[in-house]
Structures are given as C-alpha cells and as structure tokens.
Length: 108
Image (cartoon, rainbow, N blue to C red; front, side):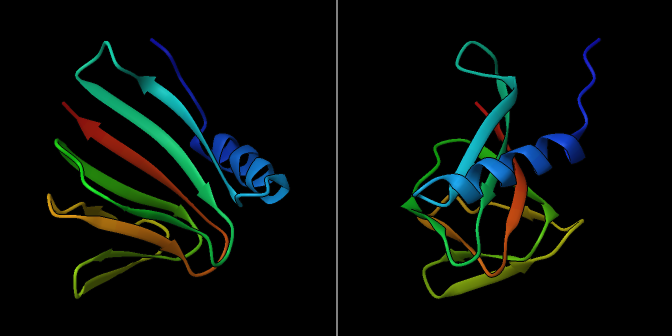
C-alpha cells in the first residue's frame, strides 16, 4: 500500500512550474513504462499549454486546481476543480486559463 497526498503533490508541482521557464512541471506518482497504468500530476501556469499531440491509449484528466481547456479540433471542454475529462483519441492539447494542476491517467 502506498499513499500520496494529491493536494501536496499539486502544490509542489505548481511551485516548480512557477519557477520553470516553460511554466510547467510534472511528476509520475504511479506506474510508468513497466505498468499498464500511469498517473502523472501535471502543473501549468496561467496561459501555458501542452502542445497538440495524440494518445494511443485510453486516458482521463482530472482537474485538481485551477481552470483549463482541453482542445481537440474545433471541440473544447472547460475543466474546473473536481471535473473529470475523458481525453479523445484524436489529436488534442491542454491550455491553462489560470494556474492549473491536473491528474493525467493513462491505461496502456
């Protein structure tokens, strides 16, 4: 059994993102390349984004703090704390409206 505080990890990642020139930071908190499930806490400062990309696996995004937009083509979904967004299999990007932290879960 392993226990982590998402609140503490989110706070630390946002602090790291704020001091990074890219305005973002991430930490995998469970799984990885040798597991079928990977969970990563990602922090973006206001206005920063993850460039458009594709995912080959099922994935969800749970907003922990702040507000963000998940964009896929002409579709946009706004996410606020507590929202769970299913990431489309099409190309997509994520943009932080204000300082935002989310939990990305990817299943292989």
